[in-house]
Image (cartoon, rainbow, N blue to C red; front, side):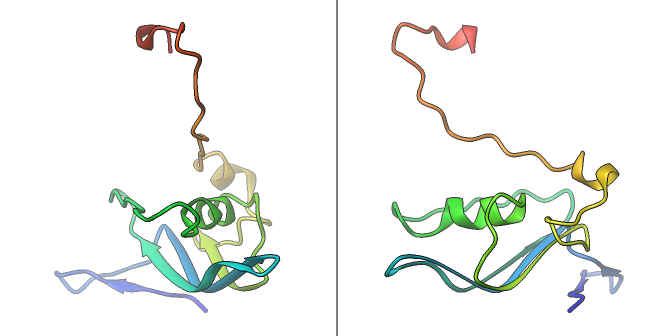
Length: 108
């Protein structure tokens, strides 16, 4: 499936990323259950939700670190698990890390 977004001026843009009907479970826990999201290049999107809502699972799928049990994930029109190196270099992911209290914020 090649999803497209039509902007206000009528031009068609391919999303920078899309998750379509994505399902991912960990045992009996459904982290993603038919999750759909797409984002345009140059836009900022925030994922907000309670702990265990699937935010990290969705991001890990987008960067190719976790493969969902079903659904489609695309980044720049390609699967994150088979992405060409020039496109892979455009994708980043920083995990939330807790620093010890003795590390000053300006040192980070």
